[in-house]
Each structure stands twice: as structure tokens, then as C-alpha cells.
Length: 466
Image (cartoon, rainbow, N blue to C red; front, side, top):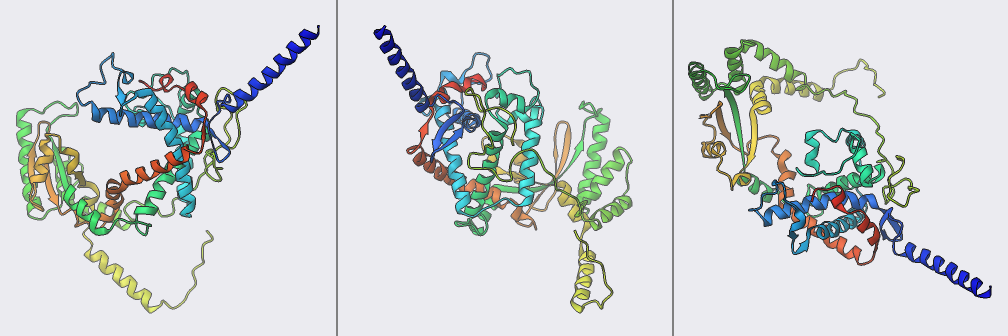
């Protein structure tokens, strides 16, 4: 009897010890790591598994240009990424990216950045729209690559998909909020007025060398079904294209030329109507309604996220998913108009008299840019044709189903050229920026505890095509 009591006591102590052991090594798989005493939701790690898989597949494409990933028996698991087994690389990188979220949060706070109302509203609406959107829409597959999913669920939305994968709405929100913070920190370092801004001389030199601005007017040689027109109609349209080209050379705008083309094809407009329409359009502020109410609230908790991005905890040890938590107008008074206000009005009238409505319409409708380096490894006839054009001299490119009137423009002769600045700055500094964040993440990981049981449980092969 005494022996039984001793045995029972030993067994009881063993169970208590085992409970403490499991708790200490991360038996609770709702959390992926502990940072500064705070448990980080596993959903952050799962979201970063998707991001890591995208990185891995991009690196694979660079390292294995001769491998066809579309064949039926292809599997990334058969290969290594940077000398590491594919799945192991994805998980290691996901851990690193999860730690990097804290580095981004720290820098966001250190730089005293904050979301304005427009950004906050845009994030809230964007996150809620994504969460509630039909995940089967083709364009959304681009989020995770062409072979993104092999995970069967009965749900139709991203909420269904991510919930099944183990991601809560709070983690989904925290992840995408951190992405916005990452962009804002980048701007705060390298953008205008940043702590280490890229000079105008540097980015403009790259922009002028690597970008081309051009204007184009297509002349279709196919019917509504995409089939080639009869030879006599093709000849007639090419004669029209030549006539339009001559008009442009003589100073006619692309807008007026497009109106002539429309009239020739379907007889829907004449020059005078287009003139009036565009004047009304410009006088009305180019279709922009300044009084449009953009306010709105979504369900995502963007307003006051805590450091974990979570507002509640799941009761399950299996994963983190559960319930979602997440003008006074001035009256006009009669008074004498100040002299400077009268002068301003006269200046505005003069600006309108000098304003070329067709030139602005051409810029809005027919101008585009191309980046030369994007086509370095391609034999693209149209791009080469545009590159070879003399600036300001239009020419016709004869294609199979359409001819195009192209005119190359001075890439720097554009009032809104600064709109392209941050795109170039990203090209120049993004690798440096990512290296800085990754270094901070690796240093942080030396001080945190990773829940390896959660890493092993949430195997990316369950929901990402490998």
C-alpha cells in the first residue's frame, strides 16, 4: 500500500514536471517567439512563410534559369536555396522576417512617424476588403505567385483561407500594417527631407538614363473578335495612319488625331465637340471632385494596435484563430476685394488663356514610360523602335494586328517628373534598406526564444505549393 502511494506521488510529480517542461519549450502553438517578454502570435510567422516562399521562388528562378517549374512532377523540395533545403530555408527566413517586423516598429517609433487619417482609412478599407474578398479571383493569386495554393477549403474568401492556415484577422492586420510602416520608414530615411535622402542629381541621372517617355496612338487592324481585317480595310486604315502622322508632324495633337480616328471608324465625334468637351473637362478640374467624402471605417483594428497587433487571445492551443477583434462653412460677407486677390484672379485668367488643353489631354491619355533595363534580355521590336526614335519626331510602327504612331519625348520635360522620384529611389536604396533591417532582425533573434514546436507544426507544405 505504501509502495502504491509513493508510486502515485512520483507519477504525479512527473506529470507536473512534464507540464512545466512542455510549457517552457513552447507547447502552446499560438505563439511563435517571445520578444521582450511578449509572446508573438503564430499568425505573424505564417504570413511571413508566404513572403519567404515568394523570396525563395525568386531566388530559385535566378539560380536555376534552365529549370521548368511548370512541369507536372516539379517540386521546389527537390532543390536547395543558397545551400539550404527549401522548406528549411523558407522557415528560417520566415522567422527572420517576423523578427524584422519588430525592427520596423522600433524605427517607426524612433522616427516619430504616424498615420494620417487618409493613410489609416486606406489601410483599414484595404485590409478589410482583402480579408473579405473572393480568393479565387485571378488577380489576387499574384499575391502568392502562380503556384501559390494547394490547400483545399470550402470557403470562398481570404478569411476562409487564412483562418484554415492558422492566421487570425488580427495577425493579418498587423502584418499589412507593418508593411505600410516599412514603406514610411524607407521614405523617412531616403525620401525628401529624410535622414539620408537621395540627391536630385543622383536619381535624375538614373531616371534620364534608364527611362523613356513616349506618346502613342494605336490604329487597330483587327475586328472586334481580334481577327485581321480584309486587306482592303487594312490598306485604308494604314492610309489613315499616314494622314494622322502628317497632321501630328504639322502640330496637331494626339487628342485631335484620336478624334479623327474615332470619326473615321465609328463616326462618334468631330473636332469641335472634342474641343468643347475637353475645355469643360479642364475647367471642371479634370474630373476631380474636391468635395468627395473619403471618410469611412472598416473592421480592421488600425487605430490603436498594440505591439503584437492582437486585441485578444484564442482559447485554443492549436492555432491563433478565433473570433475577430478586432465643415463648418463660412458665410460670405460683402467686403472690398483686396488688391492682391484681384491680381491673382487676373493671373489665373491669363494662365487659362495660355493653357493648351490638348497638350494636357495628350499627357493624360497618351503618355507613358518604359524602363529600358526591364527589356535588356528581351528581343522586343516595339521597345527598340521607341528607343531609336528621335525626340519629338513621330513615326509609325507597323504591327500584325495594329499600327502605332509613336513619338518619343524628353523624359525630364514633364511637370510631374517628381512623381517618379520614389520609384527610382527604391531601385537605388532598397537593397541597402533591406540589409539594414535583416541585420537588426538577426541581432534581435540572438536575444529571443523561438517556439520550435510551432515552427514544426505550421509546415508550409500544408498550404504553399512546394
